[in-house]
Image 1 (cartoon, rainbow, N blue to C red):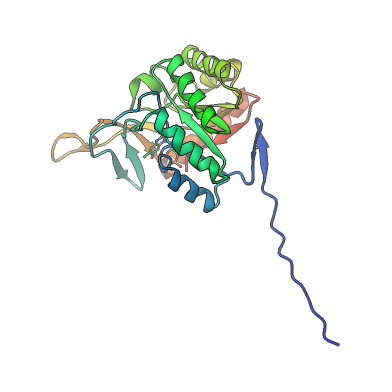
Image 2: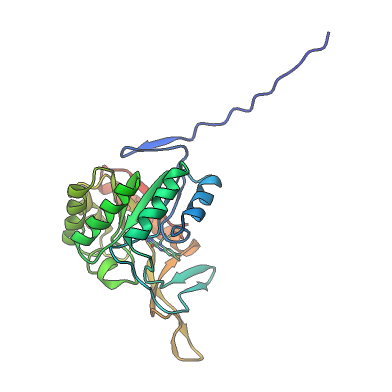
Length: 252
Ligand SMILES: Cc1cc2nc3c(=O)[nH]c(=O)nc-3n(C[C@H](O)[C@H](O)[C@H](O)COP(=O)(O)O)c2cc1C
């Protein structure tokens, strides 16, 4: 008699749940690199991302800085894009399109004050985002990543204002460009943040020695890639020692 064997490949369960966010696996497309058009966000999800985070957007949008805005440095990267984005009305359409495709999407927002942060967050929620990430950490837009992101008081103000405005979970994305990342993390937690992302890019600069001037159009840039990894690991470790809310690790 012939015997048949059926092999069943069991897929491991990689699902995670934190801060009211349920994901099929713990990978998330970080904000900013591929997050402006719905098509590319859907593609990232189809390639396996548990969720996607949009490019950071604000009320009216921004043009960003002139080129060069992204360069390779010692196997890592420096960028000074200046958060170019089409503004919240257009981003609402992109988010709604991503949601329609069944993709879990988190809206990344920024502003020049707490009111603008909350308006953009509310737009993200209305469009169907499952959570909102607050970019209080972009190093090359000084008013956002430095004036707000380096001040525990101002980070707290932004988180509080957004928490008042939306019902979805609020994630504060931290900058490593501070003396004490714990102080910023604590302020965000005390203001009601449901989770934290650590980290955004580290402030850097590149000089063209032949021309005797900075290479990036925006002069100062954010360092990402392999060189950022140990900084990100250190930041997550320090933040974990300080807060009781979940932390999303960012920085390869
Ligand atoms: C070109 C570029 C654009 C980015 N834009 C954003 C952004 O709009 N909002 C944000 O919160 N982070 C932005 N980031 C930061 C990334 O989300 C991430 O925190 C950083 O790149 C570190 O991760 P990595 O080393 O894996 O690239 C950007 C990074 C790059 C390289």
